[in-house]
Image (cartoon, rainbow, N blue to C red; front, side, top):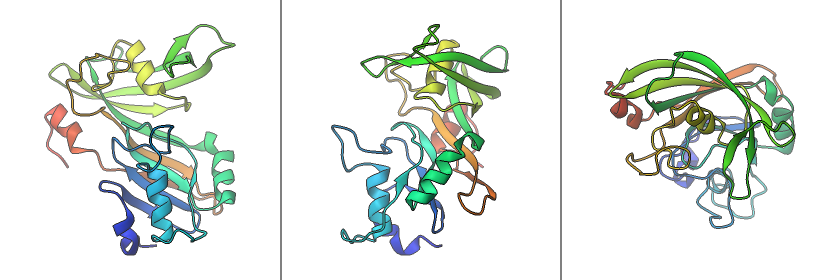
Length: 232
């Protein structure tokens, strides 16, 4: 299905990667929330995409359903459902989903490839941390591989083996290599324009055809500038 007719209802930077009667896959820009918070109700992917499927008509029964989330400052592939049935089907098989990220970090991890495993918990200030208390934390696993190095930074491919809040950011910071631009878990001084974390690709079974689908979001130009690489 072509999104061209509804494009005027999309906020700048939010692009449709795929659309059918059951799912909607988009490339979310950094700086946009997935869903509303106590302080922000309308500047979200959910609000924008609900308006998109309603074509601006508030009384339309069309809507979207959140399947998973990306942090406000993380860009990349975001999957939404078009029906309750599709949402339940996707979430019921979410353990079959493969999620691949790109991250630029300070320094170069050693070894250059590995899996980080720990228990993660969240405090009342919404700060996620590593804990040895297995009754409080949730088992979390993140696989990484160094792709490039430049000027004290490294570009990593990251596979999210579990889906905890802030998991990649906390795990890489605990490893001693925080994500560039992460002022919550890395250097406090905001030396970079944005968080260098991008949901590059996602693979999952379609909720009804069961065919495995893969969608990719283009790498932001910010990553190429950080690594001194020519964009593809």
